[in-house]
Image 1 (cartoon, rainbow, N blue to C red):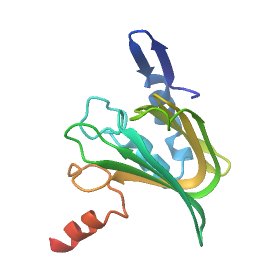
Image 2: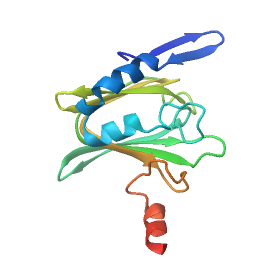
Image 3: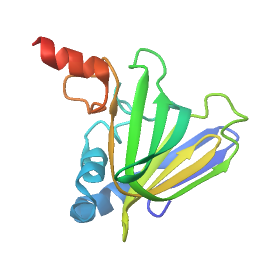
Length: 168
């Protein structure tokens, strides 16, 4: 993390996103459109908000080859009364790195993430309780599957949302 501070101690973990939010206020225009929308979403860094992806646990990471290049999909499983899954889809991936022990710790919860411009598009670093995942991609989409709040970002590939949209 370049701007976000994460400090762990015996009493837990403290995160400070304020320096990043200040940077984002001046530099968001440097991010690709999908990354910019995700970074600027008011729920993203409001950790008290029901629809913030913070504390969702790493559930699945997959990679597939498409006509448009490599796509990486991260699925985060939410806690409590929040919707079940938050999906990050990275398009035109040029680099993926995972360190730590995500597999050995059930419910490796998301502490914080940071999106920064990169010559290939965007560099997205996600810090979990069990380690870090960094993805460099041309761009990304991010959103909840199924019953998100009316203003919350939604996964554009969620079949349940597509069905809702066609029934109105």
